[in-house]
Length: 369
Image 1: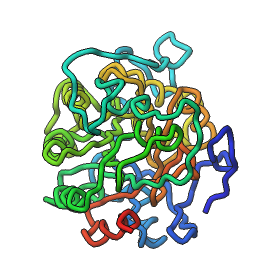
Image 2 (image 1 turned 180 degrees about the horizontal axis):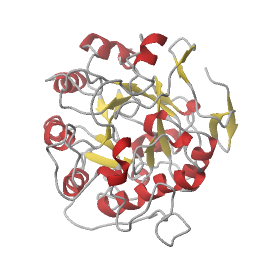
Image 3 (image 1 turned 90 degrees about the vertical axis):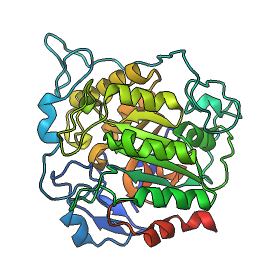
């Protein structure tokens, strides 16, 4: 397991270098390849049984194969209201776009996915909805599985997609075994503010912002009364749909509908999905602050959770996220999330096209004990 040190209540890597390992269930290390290769965010941890060779074959968290990479299209990305560039500046500008700290909107009340009275019913994932104590006290005993999904449309040869019917089968199993989906606000309040999570808590996360989340996943969330967190690449969220692409992205209106429903919460996955550990400080600021500005403006709440593209981060990135008020972050390390990993560097459990139902159940077996 990577050596850590305590820093202002968080546990960060001793080295400022991007992590180049995968933690295994037995505490061992699997070296993995950060080679740039595929669009799906280097989530391609092929389960806990994957070998080092297999990890290299999928290039760490990407999947080798044909198709257009999102990173190869970054010149077309939508950065929000003002045109900005990946070097962190726009025409005549020397500073990154500031993040929107709080943008609230009144309107029809969304569904209440947690069944308790919310202080902020317009945003069910607001951590203040769940704060029990006034003083933050770290609870290292909380352990929660965060499931990591991407594209629900099956594409042969693409590990980041799902088999037809796979997601429905997995969600039905969660419901049948009395799992309760939670949001990032609930998790944060449980970590620090005395909130008691429901039995068998689980987080559903969907990375990148594919339109299948709206067309296929959203109906299932409503049917089974489940919450989900959507980590969105702001630069690929446009006003009009483009369904001629191999992997169509969500539109702004679809994103807003998902957020307004109460069943989904939109969070940050950068502007153009670049490995932040390879960028300059100004580029990191633009990727993080630029996406926060766009997403906050669209869904009318501040960004509190962050997902690292390609699983890449370093001390510089963590410091920037903390300074901008981000509360939680998710990595590509595999396992249940717990505070000892660091609030900004939490583990997840990847669910891919080759994840069998038996493997899915096995990875959630700690919750059944």
